[in-house]
Length: 361
Image (tube, rainbow, N blue to C red; front, side, top):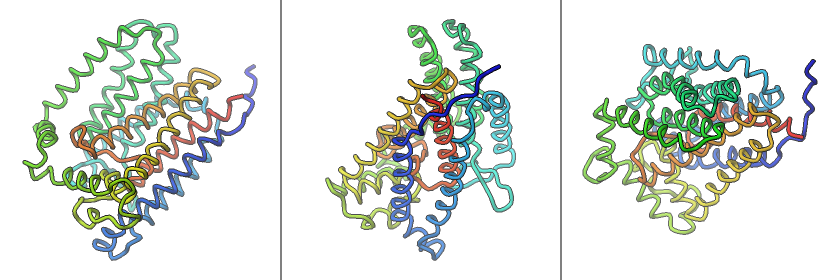
């Protein structure tokens, strides 16, 4: 009979960083969205109120998840993955379109993005698959089969949300890389991934257009957002214009509270403030790494590693897009950008990592 797991101490370092990011994120969101809220909805607090509601729900879910033994989710990992596939199909068939992207499912007054749930489902599914295959992880065929198993969700999500598809694929690569005792075979896996990505980009002309806009944003009408974001970053200087004093958020950067919010952070907080925010993300990623290395078993370690990969990839991609280091992919900055589904599932994921840390002795 299996002995019950003994509870260790909560990871207070992780908790402090998560709460700091949540609070700072809400402050930044209000500063960035107040103008748009007043113009569109005659309410400066419109976006903040919706985000506070989603954040409160997310914090409650985080607390509940943190107090559930994470081993129970291994039994439901496959079911969660197939549910994410079904929800992604539903988005294609019945989803609602916003700003030219069909990513939302609506149930009465509530709507959410299934792609956010898919990130957590893929982490649990891959952790389960890797634990199940154990000693066979040194075989190239096993690695390929595991990677192929997540291609359906990558393709379905990528049909309307390329950035999230890249994150899911990146999570898969990181987890398989960490679990494999061999490294040379990842050269072939990388070549296969690049080939898949090239084909995926070529299937739709608008994706190739994004590459052209990235190279010369000033030549295209769709490059306007990128240029205005760069103006915001450049005008912030070392210490910024001051909280609430951004000029670019006054209609120059479209939907500034969403994907481009980091440019407003740079304008109002300057290089120093933006660097502090990046430092918080680095500390968060470091805490995930510590938990992954000390986790009581492989399944827990892979959960923490998956969360680390998710956070690392999403933060890097968002900042790279805002600074025009890579083509625009429409990706949010965790805990900071506006999006109720995003912050709710992020906090749920944090609760999952806390449940792993709670069993570290």
